[in-house]
Length: 299
Ligand SMILES: [Zn+2]
Ligand SMILES: [Zn+2]
Image (cartoon, rainbow, N blue to C red; front, side, top):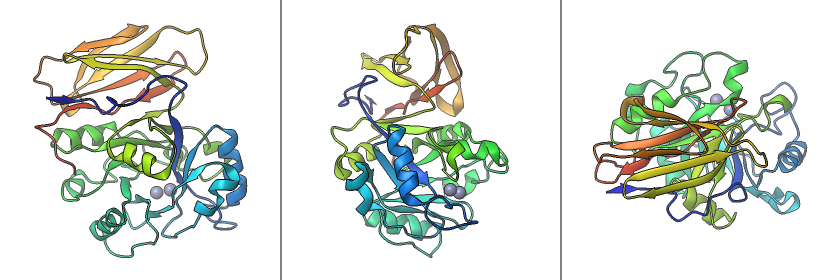
């Protein structure tokens, strides 16, 4: 039986909470987080975000008290910065142990862990064999925009399909990896959650009820009788034509369609199918996979 991670979600450009879990701020001149926390929160608020984590390198920043003032749901976390990096979100202390210990500690506190920029500097900055031997993470950054002004590739759907094809259900996340103003609003997660309370946001992340975007919104995601129908849109535009790419095991391109929506009829052999939508200007949207529940385990 297939599971649709959006089955309980309201879908449309008017729904969802815009979130970035990878933001460096408030750590002083000459550091990655050189902009003041207040200035950064103000800018994210202006850009339409409702959920944010200040995630500094191996440094716990208590940003949650700012939430009310800026009307943003702030979830504390940090970037575990022994190579390869990870975002530990929803925890209240930095773990100085190894990667597995840091994941376990974050999860024990009710948080979740995202593997960072898997192709920074080189392909497999996050080696696939290490990922295969790591457990408990919620997902990975399939898109980290900062990497495009550093080295390597900010895209990591190759790593995502590797993990999924190993029967491990990891969610795809998008991040600004905010260091300076030019990084803001480049890639985000739209969380299809009943409210932006911390508990609803956390539950929606755990169940995969969110998608990654660099400019598009999901206007339709229907899954009935193994038939998947998806459409994307710009927030307010008359544009009707988008490209839809249906992707399955090992990153295999199952179908490409252009039009008002994309439709793919699963034959039951697919272990998972995920969708990428592309707008006229190259803006993208990545959905989480529809997946066979007898095939997958959590990482
Ligand atoms: Zn990093
Ligand atoms: Zn970072």
